[in-house]
Image: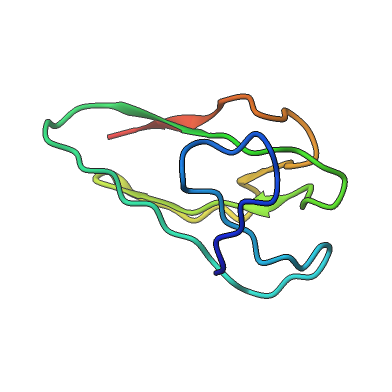
Length: 91
């Protein structure tokens, strides 16, 4: 995916977009944190919200306790602009 810094509100240098509003391109992005200690961790996401963002962006989280593949797990990226949104707590 192309990294484009065309929108205010992104965090650091990790804002990604494929610039295809309303079109499912099948592209994915992957973030892998460095976990140095076992335990439960909260997973958050943050995005600049606009009306051309998906209202049900799918999320897949892999963690030590299994693989969250529930297709209904999604985020509405047309709301909650620049807020850290809790996705869940995982081991």
